[in-house]
Image (cartoon, each protein chain N blue to C red):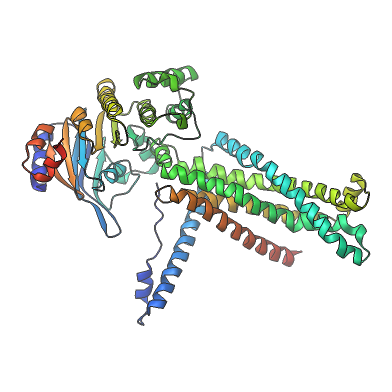
Length: 279
Length: 258
């Protein structure tokens, strides 16, 4: 198994400085070393995954199994979350729109909000919790119980079998889950609209989509692939590099959720900025 | 003591064919030197027991043999190939000839016993038909006396059963060399005896050469052709069980006290 070695020792960083470093500065150097070595290790892991993705043979059966596990098994959670998002957004927005006499614009506003931003980000964060922690815990426990090493001595490449399949499945399943969440969100919104008024579902969707253009949909759809890749990669990295002992499994699962959630927000910010410049 | 062990090794292995040759192996984790100049020979067809206290570097030693860990220096020759110089494809080919029984069994939790056995078989022996695969699985399960466990999940098996299934998963590939990492740890005395008997059966049936890492003396007595004792990462003594037992050293004698 490849050992992920720290890129540089903190003491080396300190030794490079010509001034005598105080203890506080040394602690800062240790922190910087930890951050950069972890970032470096994760980059190496990502590059290895990318390289293995394009080398044969491809573990197609395991990939399909993971699509089912990550995609199909997340549908109920995503459906409920999506519907509640749409419902709450409608209930919360109605009074403000009413004040401006624009209650009739409620479907359009909810549709644009859901499709452009809220649907992808909230669904990705929910999936970071479900899929990311699941992958982190699964691979972490496989590492602790030597199953990954057993795979390696059976002449099977665990990066290919375990990591590539999960990253690919998460990357391809997340856009599907986000589309599903958006649809459920609009449905929830229609229910929200109908709490106070009576609006036909066909008319509701007709109004909602009248405000959504292809350019609203495209960036959201593209970033959903990145969200999936982030969830898959972080979950696999944390599980694959888990330490020894059962405690490591919990740490791997927990840190997979925390880091992938943070990265999702950062990726979202970058995509929004790029979209803002390009469009 | 080390020089003594080296000369005993040379005397014991002279004129024999070694399937594993390790010379001056060193491995450290930071400031902790786990293996310091370890040399050993595993002779074709023998059961070599590596004894040592916990933390003496036994598991690190066999993980270095299959390159699950890379040594800092020294050479490891397995079936005539220097393992640290092999490319990944060559290493994968070599690993097909070396069976490894992990301390925990390392059965794949998400797969049934049948799928656990199929997993390496279908990947390594791709030319086998479904019928042949099924026959090989049943034969391996018969050899460990667990045909009835075919469709069970690992979580439904006891510790001893998991070890035996793990053994079946390893021998199904007809390996030339078997590496056992503490095969009887955590098992009751009766199951330990059964596993020890299985190790001998596998050697007799498949003509494998075995390197057994253990600190379980009943297991060592049952299977040992030769014994090598590791102390603080170095070869402390080597010889047949009778020879090692006769060494007048309190530390070595502590292993053989009942």
